[in-house]
Length: 404
Image 1: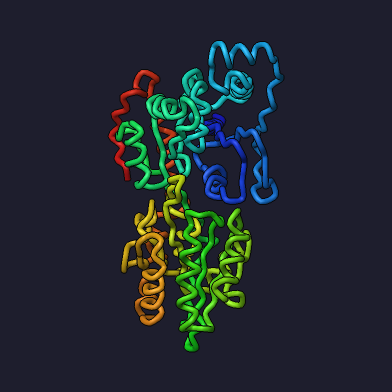
Image 2: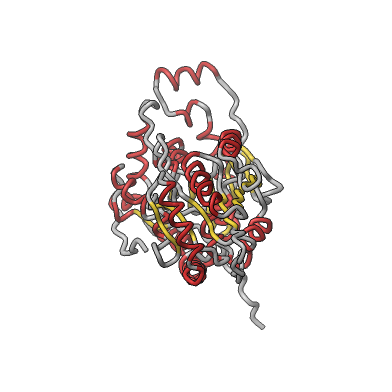
């Protein structure tokens, strides 16, 4: 009797993330742990939030021993990049010799710039993914912008969370044929659709979930809600998340007289978020471009809320219009326009049938376009594509894959 052949081992992707993981990086965790046809291990310089993001295959890179004479020569005489004079390159290459991988996925563009010497020297392909804040120029950092342009030529494929990032990457000089849309998928089982009764007494529940940072438009959301609350004193606004703006927002809440109506909930688990969405009627996310040009992609929390059937009130910013179609899955207003956001809040709560229709369409959009399994399938297809390319082909990628 012939023996059944052993299944072929899965190809391996080394997932490089400088910090694995910060609390707001759930989308990275979903990608790393969601792979099906590929196995992966993580390379990181710092392990954080291990209880929140458990994963056994993590290689925390040791700090290289300092040879000050060699470091001085590499940095000031040879003017080699930091990854050389800090000794990181050899440390990473040693790990990859011990744990061979078929390719590397470098998370965040600025990390790719730092690892450009590795991208050039390693014998396997690397892909880099951009998520929003990592698209920024850094004129204060000598040579950074040139290295970014070199990175975009050196890798076979460039992944981006939203189409809005494509134009920015092209302005950096990335060939359009290298760009691939890398959606972050939503696990629909964790955020099931909910049928919500509409309040008859004006006790509307608004929710926003995000890091408490400028680009999330929280000041605009609070000022619009203050106008709404003046007409609907039973309304509540709950904000899930934490961040550097917390003290400022607490002050603004007091200044607007919303102490009893607004609740800052801090970071919540997926189950807690799902429960919060289930008890709400409208999701707010009026993102805006901050001075540092930290552009929003397609916010994960917005997609999670949509999956549960929440219509969205947001802005025409970054990748948001790629998920929210005006008057179909929500309403979009200009950035920093609290009067327009207030008017949209009034419109939705006055037309409950419309609100219900928008919520149904929002859930359908996430199910059809942002479901986690489909997103992982596409990502692994990009891995296949990068592995199939020869080093000589990387500079002039001419793949037939489209940008969908």
